[in-house]
Length: 150
Image (cartoon, rainbow, N blue to C red; front, side, top):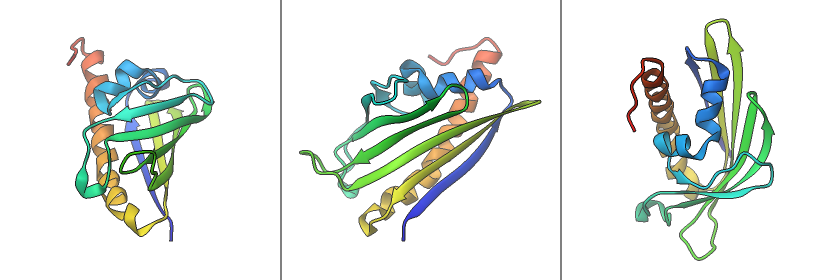
């Protein structure tokens, strides 16, 4: 059975500000990982972190931008494996932004955890994405109050 991570988070900030943290490589690096992301459909990019041998993970997420609707939706593939071109996790991340009177609702759906060997990634990312939302909130709040953590 395929498992799906679904989260929703409210930011008391304009949709454009939240969007920047999802689409600007230098801002993505502040809350997620080093990357060579470009907000262009079809662009292949990578997120890079340290290898995690217990997850059979070489430290690289191989991604491709699948869809962009500016300030509303962003999706990309999210693949990983032990290295040498072997892919054991083939998943998709979808971000949706909904402006409200008081800020922005951000919805995350990360799907494709179909194999038993993906269960550790699923469990780690379920909590991990929540921690990333908190990091985005800290960064946005610092900017709003004139402070930067960079």
